[in-house]
Image 1: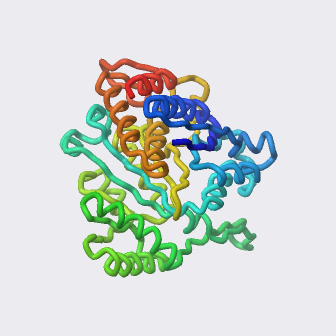
Image 2 (image 1 turned 120 degrees about the vertical axis):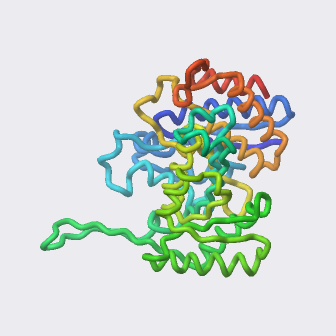
Length: 358
């Protein structure tokens, strides 16, 4: 199999973690007889520095010509003073929109070897945690109308709009239902329907669509504030969480920390086709950039999701996941998941160890 992968390493630790994932993908290609080519492209702060904008047209063009996209991380304090439409994060939102990627899948899994890394007490995690957050990606408050104005009595005032259409809600519900059918056939749909009109439409549409097209899938509702509490109170109760853009952004980070480290959590962003964008859910961590201490596992797991979901290579994806489990079982740890008695390794060595076990 020949596949062309666009690589948006981005800022901060982005280049280090994508290098680690590429090393693992090269080993997969070698073992299974594939040909993966990698094309580095600019996006985020590095693109601002080189081109004056966070998402150059050339990057969009090449990503759309690729079979899938591997992303590191974007942003950092260097660019925090820029206007909103020129910040690195605008590039991330832009590439998702350009590729028409409306679903973000974030698996939050507690690996058995990392049970001690969870901040929760043992009784809450001993049966394992595996939450699949299905987040709508191109609608909601992140893409709604916004602005600022001067209020005579209150001063400068800013506003953002949370807006969803029936079609946007239906298509993300479709993704969640298909995934639920492969798991426990249960979905918890997260909203704030006691306050927000957009959430009331969300709740109505999710139930109507699931009942009509996926009658074997059970959908329950949970308010977002209660969901946040329940993730730390009883995380094992969750399987598939269906969320809006902003709620999913927040809750997936919480779920990541509950499972031990945000450095372990992968994600995939998909639309109607097979081309996707794969990235860790953590940020660019500029404070540790270039120090070879970042955890590459989330990015490696994202690459495994690419193998499975975009390239149709489930055996290769499982090989990567088994290699990660083996390395963790052998006691190797990066700084963020280090515990007493374990062997501390850097970003590059962790990726090398995983690649060697494929």
